[in-house]
Amino acid sequence: MAELSKKDRMKIPRQAMPEQEPGIRNANFKEVNLGFTEELAVMEAMRCLQCPKPVCVEGCPVGVKIKDFISLVAERDFAGAAAKIKEDNVLPAVCGRVCPQEEQCEMKCVVGNKNAPVAIGRLERFVADYEREQIGLRIPECKPKTGKKVAIIGSGPAGLSCAADLIQTGHDVTVFEALHELGGVLVYGIPEFRLPKEIVRVEVEALQKLGVEFKTNAVIGFTDSIDELLSTEGFDAVFIAVGAGLPYFLNIPGENLNGIYSANEFLTRVNLMKAYRFPEYDTPVFDCKDKNVAVFGGGNTAMDAVRTAKRLGAKSASIVYRRSEKELPARAEEIHHAKEEGVHFEFLNNPLEFLGDENGWLHGVKLQKMELGEPDASGRRRPIAVQGSEYIMDINMAVIAIGNGSNPILRQTTPGLDFNKWGNILVDPDTMKTSKKGVFAGGDIVTGGATVILAMGAGRTAAKAINEYLANPEV
Image (cartoon, rainbow, N blue to C red; front, top):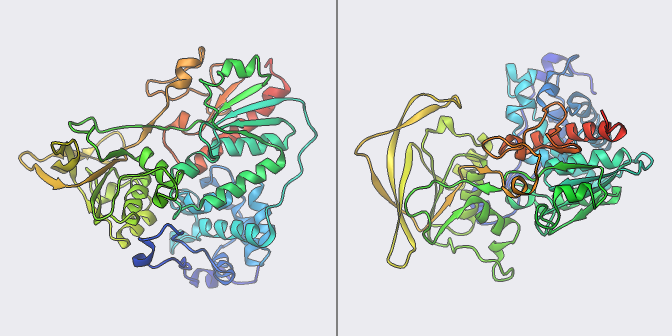
């Protein structure tokens, strides 16, 4: 790394990410953030203090060697930086875009004690994009075949990271995906303007070149049960990584009116089935053009939905959230981008009832104003209803984005597999072992809705434990 004193490094400001102008991007589905140039990346890398004990790694669920890869960026060895990241993270182009680095590695960054932390996520994205665009993804060598077979259920981040580790240790790996495209939540849940689907496809293709077999339209629990995979299909172990795909609803009157979607359905239709290009693609979505759209919820999924509605031509696109802005769980960057793009925020409002016309179409929602009381179990201040404050908000479309639960199919078809009261699979957190011999689980099916990088961490933990189990299944 170029010789600069600590004092000089601390003087370098955090480099701004180039991005599309708000008034242009809110009408298209092209990526908002445009990525660092080489010069910006090198300048940002120079801000790293190269700490003897890099605490930023403690904030990374997969343990990326942050200090080392940033040093290589500063030296303009971008290919070396990519290789260094991929020692621990098989999806850097994805994680560099959608992971909440501000709550993980960047929160630990020593530079952040006095200045803005080093933009670790943006450097990760730059390095991954450089490899893909300038070099092409390089395929690592795999160990000799062991003769063992592992089934992975789900091709989201947990499944993909587990598959990558297991195939490199010599096991045969088959990934079963319920949908017709691979990538799980990366393709159906995250909009193109945040994560281009081509990036996910390239990452999946790299795993295919390593030897991972993928089977789409395979709903385990219907096509085959887990017991059948282990007995008649000849698999030696199973990793369950199906995510949390069952949407929660508000359970208020009128929720069955036409024009009301779960965020899952709305985003899947747009992201995976390209409803925004109807009739070129034949899966329609409610015509948002010149309509008043309200999204209920305050997380990243809610931001994805409301920003998508804006791009589909909504006259107004609003977030309705029962707490204040301070309690919003979404990433600060997503909230900032939403505001820039013209999204309205209706804070301290709680929906009581959806209102429809004589033909069953949504035309409004009754809201009640809230105020904040003492913190609840989540640590956020509990919203309390303000009596007599009800009013009607005129809307033509609603999207419910208040979280997801686990699909009950596996629970209904897998005897001996233990679940908690919310339908999440119970595991040993150190090994991801379930109550069923040879069966492991990780990601949102275990934790509930969480982040891409946490799911990947679970996949890597499971891969290590599966490898040990296959070497000695009787232990």
